[in-house]
Length: 440
Image (cartoon, rainbow, N blue to C red; front, top):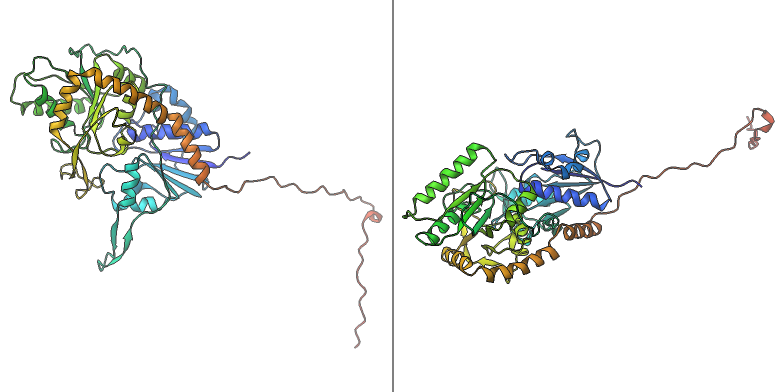
């Protein structure tokens, strides 16, 4: 039986959040065994390629990757896993898959991009809500007169990013953290992006500052481990991060500060799970201003350790407030130092209550068992509801409901004709009607 051709354009081989999302989505679609899957490989910013080669368990994807960027014919189904302004209508049925936006307003180009697709799958409720609620006046370029409204009311579904529970799970870690002398360490995982202190999206600068101020001059101090980078795993990137940490340290008026450690470079999923499970890593902390989903938070929850993060955007879909510490705060406009063509300066995102940050950092350090017991319940909640298998089930259900049936190519069977002999007598006689004589 001919399967519908399903072409997926995505950064499948990159070390990026969208790369991880792409691999999971493609794997799920392949495992459904209902489609002839082909991959059109894309880049993702300045993030490096080579993930598949470095992780042999993903080599099954290689035969699916198209060697030429041209499509031989129009596919029945076309999907793009990217930001919505890149969405294009290529197939007979078109799907846009995105983690969306981390603020309160999506760019107008993103809203228009969603309108080009038959279906948009967003990673979280936050993603879909912002894309649906972002509206702009459409004006004539010559007269500047309003000629319409840019908005999107199309078909959508929330498609969470299911975690691999075969990889992310409790175990005894052998990862080498011997350089960390403390027995209690908070862990942060994420990119350190553009923005002044307290204004970058992941809020790494403020986290470091708050950590120093909370535990300075204390006789007993925890550590903070930063698994971070700016754009890659180069020595230049590492040295730039070290200098940024030193600059923040210099603003703290004390010679008795807690230690901050930098983990820099690319790690496999299994190595990340080893880090999460290390006996010195007690909790994850992330003061993020906004998430389309926030994969590390979900993956860390599966090792049954506490999480301290903000109470806004994509990650609150799966982090239960009864089992995790979600910090309060207010919405604040994106700072000019962090704004770009995707993070609009007129949009807002989360500004955490710094007083609460210090309180809970100290309380978790002092009363760890209380938080650890709740974390086990969050781990169960994540495994039960937000696994890769659950995501695949939902993907299959959505595709069954949304994707139309396509005409199938069938073999044309002609009736067998009798062989006509050479003898003229065997030919059928052709009877012609008699013609009347026409009078002159």
